[in-house]
Image (cartoon, rainbow, N blue to C red; front, side):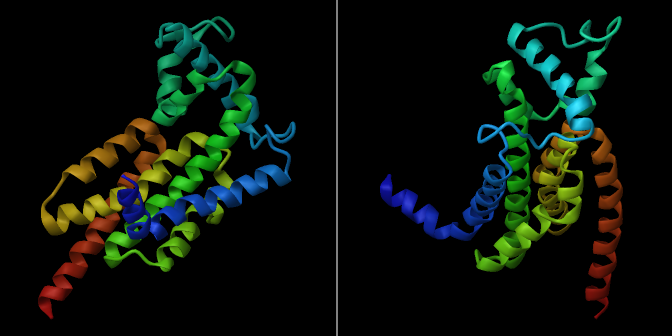
Amino acid sequence: MTNKIKDILKTHKYLLLSFFLPVLLLEGIVIAEKIQPFGSESFLIVDALHQYLPFFADYQEKLKHMDSMFYSFHAGLGYNFLGLWAYYLASPLNLVIALVPKSMLTMVLSHLYVLKIALCCFTAAFYFRKRRGKDEISIVAFGMAYGLCSYMVGYSWNIMWLDCMVLLPVIFLGLERLINDDKCYLYCISLGLAILSNYYIAIMICITLVIYFVICMILAKGKNFN
């Protein structure tokens, strides 16, 4: 078992580094900015603090007490919870909130930001590795360039959008496999997860995929012509 672990670490060292290096970097920011549990601050700002946090608190109660997912009476005269869940809360990663007490919810959401951004770096590095066919230091740099780009930083407080950004490099890889190898499984599964996680950003991804598909077809015809 030890030898297998060593082989995995050796074979995938840069791919693993693309995940753990952003985690260390972002957790260093957590400590420096006194984010919970290292202080009283959090990454939750703007709508994330005043709007999304109550939604997560309501969702946490439903998960813990197995309440109905169709309706909630925790605001005004009640509201359609299923529609709200479909947009804000559908990410499978959000299920972790069922494992912690309500007092830790803000802290957990702050660290979910860290996890999702690190996963963005990882999936981007995974995509670049598959494109280049080897595990090298450049995939760490390009993966972090994707996961820590201005869009991710500027809109990271929209935590429900980040899951689609995690899946985007995998979806691109799946589309390329569909075009080049006639294999649809990775594309269908990754795009399906993106639609489930947040249909709003998934719409933007679908539009992008149409454009990318046309570009791939043009490039393929250009190669055949030459």
